[in-house]
Length: 160
Length: 223
Length: 245
Image 1: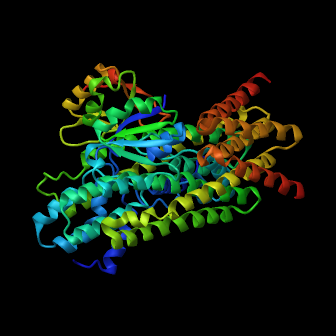
Image 2: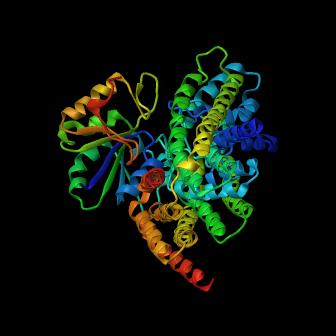
Image 3: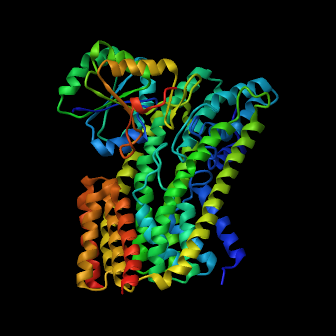
């Protein structure tokens, strides 16, 4: 399982991921999948500041990620793949890329139109439908903020 | 004899202050058990009893990290309850075990009580659509939230003392003789908690840990 | 560009201590961030109620950070506001910075410096120092870094503005975290051995207590539940023993 964590978290690289999950799964590489960020070096610079020494992050567009996902899965190195929002996840899941993959919802915070699902997950109705699409494409979707916390499967969540 | 009401009120006030230190104002870490329990004991007149509780609780609390919105046990007000309660009881082995078991549970309750406050704070947020929205409203709501956190800490301390003190008063005649077993269990627990921090510092630092342990053995040998 | 006077810097510094005061699950420390910035916004938008409201509106939005390093964001955003930066740029800047400031602070302060300071105080106390010496060691060592970070963060943020990455990329922070973790690991080993010697009364007890060290290393973060169960059993066992005897 070389994609050790595939996570939707709008904060991308931050403490829960680096200290919480990082201490748990010891990744070799972090990949941030985001179309806007892949083209914005100054923002990338700020995002990578929080990485511990020895760990690097790549920024790729969703399309590139879809092309490379198979390779990451077969790579002996351990990957943490981060997405900023459910929309990018849905695009990544097109063509069945995520069949059999485990998707972790880690932090989607409040914004206009989104409603409370879990303390760290707020979703709009559209995003909920997109998540269902991703689940239908064969991915296993669940929420868990940190490794020690209980895992909440999509089926157990209250529809927003 | 019931403890002095003024003393209890002082402990409740201290519990509120250390609670807001942990998140809302300051983070000077007077909210850590090693400080909060000692201050609790000192207020009652016995900082030494306070720090017994404080050191053990601090050791237990070392690996608790406040990462993000995750739930975690909160040490501040429960440590005041523990340090103050233990000092009021005047020490003793049965009391030590009782206080530690109670405070570990109370830290969990205290951590849980953060959640409703953070939900309430959603509703207290200054709303940009509000015609009164401006610096004044932002500041008032911000201070209101801090005041509520202070109140939460005081309630956690007050209720904690109201539960712990009667338990302590009645426990002595019912607690068994084997003080050395309790003492050993607390020692093993403290050693375990201190050693567990190696996982937080990173297991790749095991040689530093072993070096420290060897140093300890040498120092004890010479001593 | 408007200059930020020493008096306003002091106000920002003092307000930064309360940045987490209204933590909520929706905007996290958003309200607090706006609260800290108010003295700067008052200088810039004094007398223009609408401009003030729209500036405040973009700062009560969701934000999070380690509380000490929040001063970096406060300083940099204050500078951007003074330069008249576009709202969209400020928003993207805050989003990009938020995770890094949290992560850097978690690694340096919560996971390294704080446990190291506490372990140092515990070691001092286990060696038999009086209670106040333990407290002073902990509070002074810990807060030296704490107050230093807040003040450095504010000055650096104000000086660098959007180029804050230059200052943060210097390896100083990770070097400190690395050093504190090494020292912490060493103190943890020392403290565990001292704890055994303080609590155990004879050689057999020392052996049994020392097993605690192995259990702790094996359990890691799960050690708390183990401890609670152990102590609860001892407590209940003590009561049962009295009833039986």
